[in-house]
Amino acid sequence: MDKEQLHTFISDSHGNESNICQIYAIRDGETVYDDCWHGFKTMDAMNVNSVTKGVMALLAGIALDKGYIRSVDQRVMDFYPDYTVKRGEKTIYDVTIKHLLKMTAPYKYKSEPWTKVCTSQDWTLAVLDLLGGRKGITGEFKYATLGIQILAGAITNATGMKCIDFANEYLFSPLGLPERIPHGDGSKEDQFDFFMNKNPRKYEWYTDPQGSVTAGWGLCMSAKDMATIGELVLNNGIYDGKRIISEEYISEMLTPRQKLGERMGYMNYGYLWYKPFDDREVYAAIGDSGNIIYINREKDISVGITGTFKPRIFDRVEFIETRVIPALKAQ
Image 1 (cartoon, one colour):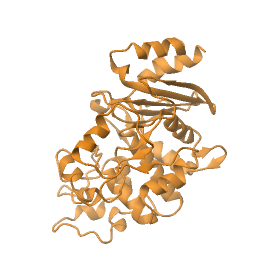
Image 2 (image 1 turned 180 degrees about the horizontal axis):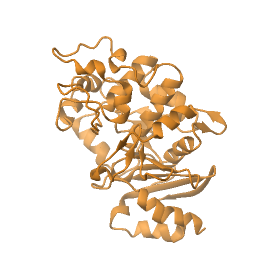
Image 3 (image 1 turned 90 degrees about the vertical axis):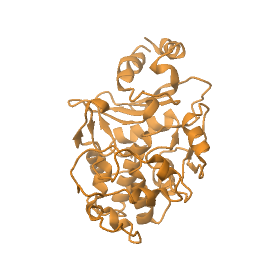
Image 4 (image 1 turned 90 degrees about the horizontal axis):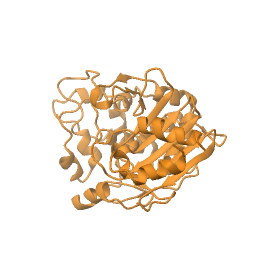
């Protein structure tokens, strides 16, 4: 299957590939694939859902490199000196930045209380109220989209900059990518539209009423943006000859910390990034609806894919390896 056949395959798809809007691939530093569907253009953006978490891991690394965060073992409460801890809550004092990055932080809920948090005036404080619990820190993996809000708040409090401004200055701009603007606080209807609308979005990032970014979702990027970020990771923190993030942190971020279960495809998990295979140098930042940053060190390739909302699509690793990469060879 060559590029033209791949374009037709996606255009004619009624299955998992039918929602793909953009594919962009970089190999050996050169653009080798750039294609769009559903009226999208290369520079259009899309809410990439949980790929946002992968970007947050990079921002944490930059904050560490610059000394704003002393260590991943620094306690979360160090960054919230004015927060009033709930009476009787002790576990919260033991939670570290690393627990947030590994998804092993404990929370006082069975399922994420989206409505409670997303209708509050300060989403970060609302999530902090849920952190901790009587079981203590067990090391159990607990995928918590809302929990990453605490990491964004820690970066903001440590740097004195809004997380979106920190991202623009130290990540997006150095990569030559457009700066993001705050989406602004929205109603329930607006939040629903942000997930479901199938039209291109601005270069924006969803924010709560305080102007804090939604750290677990809501960053809008193009497939080109994602492939470029993938290129940064592929090159151990260097982009266009400039050091953006330390090699030490990139290595730490990608090192497997957890072996995930069936629901997560038995992948390995580092700091908010996945390692799909035990024995291969392939890594990914993955979001719902098939949004993905895929990097393959063996082939020196980075791929970004965006997709509109479509339930029950988790990752496109197999699609990239069986359809996209072979199409590049066929050129």
